[in-house]
Image 1 (cartoon, rainbow, N blue to C red):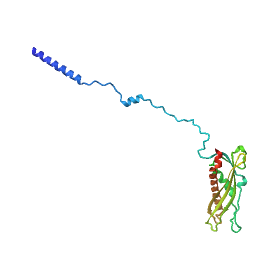
Image 2 (cartoon, helix red, strand yellow):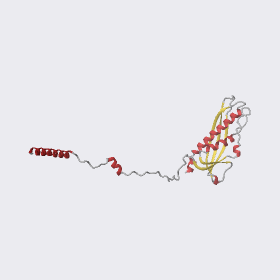
Image 3 (cartoon, one colour):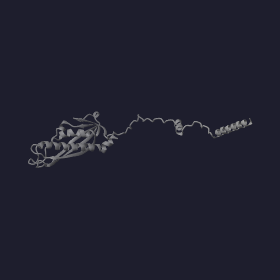
Image 4 (cartoon, rainbow, N blue to C red):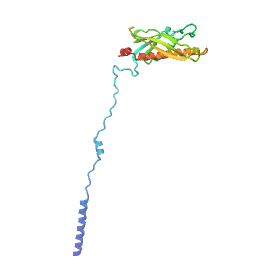
Length: 227
């Protein structure tokens, strides 16, 4: 009987020792934690979207984006000017036949070239009234000269000189400038002569028109007037 009690006591002692050892070695469950990046994201408020300003107004002295002169201009091409014909120079034995239809070419080439110079350009057959334009552009053909050639396929050159006068609404002259344009073409034979003559007149006037646009666009007087 005593032996059985000793055995039971020993078993209880061993069991108690094992339970205590397990409790000491077991670590407590840590409290629930959030990752640092998640916590920071939760505490950080998203920045407000910045919308671009839509009511920005241009400054009063802003220039047009294309660099055009900010004027309402009138290009005066009278019927008389457009009908201008120039006879070739030289003696009766050396000068070529016919006439140069320089006025017709001028009235075809000047307006398209000057469209890119002013914000508003209107072609008119006579000088306009002051309320119709801020500037009046008056061209005048000063001289036309062409070399001659004895062989049909030989090149000859033509030079056209045009004088410009620009006036304001009061009639005061603001700008005067002389420009020239030149071109080269074959003389042509009996059958192609008139065609080649037309080509050289057209191309030389086209060159003069381009030069006119360049001179007006870069004019110090007109740019100063626009300020």
